[in-house]
Amino acid sequence: MLLKYISSAMKKAKYEILKEDNTYYGEIPGFKGVYANSSSLEKCKEELEEVLEEWLFYRISRNLPIPIVDGIELKIKKIAV
Image (cartoon, rainbow, N blue to C red; front, side, top):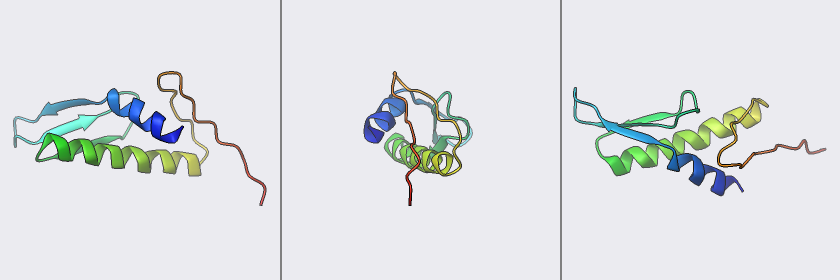
């Protein structure tokens, strides 16, 4: 389910070429703080996916809300240890 969630979120990503330095900038609407900037579109996509993964792990570890994407809701259940 996590891979499907990440894939769906990445499909919503928006990219643009920055005029100042001709680098690629990408972000995912609805995911505050999830953005990347790189010299090529492919590298930008790779970096954006890594940032998204780290953002998700951070929010999960802090029990913070995670947006629903294409009907996919990541539900975190507490595990007894």
